[in-house]
Image (cartoon, rainbow, N blue to C red; front, side, top):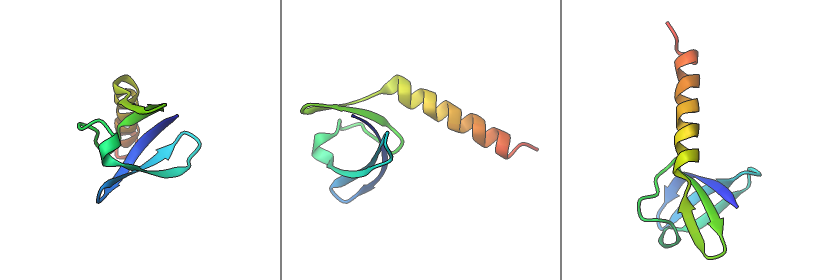
Length: 71
């Protein structure tokens, strides 16, 4: 399952899945360096950061923000 970290709430990360379902994941299950906006893949017992997917989506958001706030 793929998901993105939308926020942290105490000991939990609030994540949104590709199907737009919101789930809570205990921070101890995440990679230590996980931050808000990271895309994650959860397979079995392991969760890993999808660096390429995270970077691609951040660039797309930056591009859209530039278009929106163009002078």
